Image 1 (cartoon, one colour):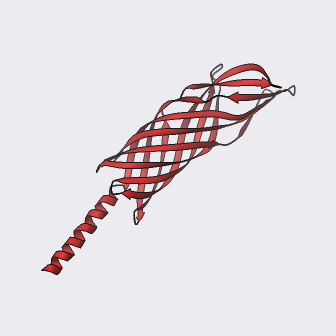
Image 2 (cartoon, helix red, strand yellow; image 1 turned 120 degrees about the horizontal axis):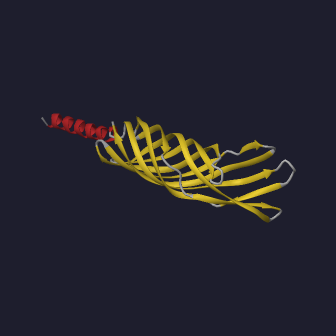
Image 3 (tube, one colour; image 1 turned 120 degrees about the vertical axis):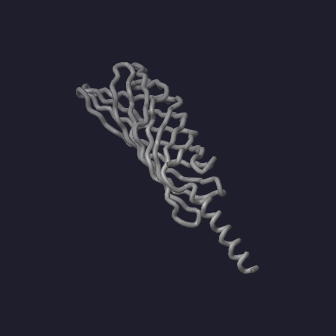
Length: 212
């Protein structure tokens, strides 16, 4: 009888542990609010006449709404892997670009940034029975918009950050993240003028995920 009770006890503990772990598995839809800080690094403009203009950019800051989808796999021993995508519903605030030639200001441009689609993977580890910590690596597209003429350009970049999920129920969780953007340099040629720039930035976000 004692052996039977011991077997039942061990089985019950194992079952409960697996049930806790399995809460993190599966597909989910997410909504989040992010505070983004994006600016343009190393703006260089060479006109058709050979004049060189540099741009000093202040950050485009603001609150952004984001939606996403992801799927989490349970690998083993409290280790997980998530993959998914997210999209920003709006752009943040605007930032000024001070255009200078030989140290003298020659004009100011106002720019606004918006994250488009981002795909990501997130190796994760169980911290407690209801908390999952993760590292997030992503590849995203960003769109810049010049407010003077509405001209838009698309850039790409790598994002990396850390985050945590806290299960609030069997079907939902809260999460928080901090991410850094390291953009790729891109060159445009328009009407004989060559423009080279790249984005950089960061974001802090808080959100909720619903499993389905």
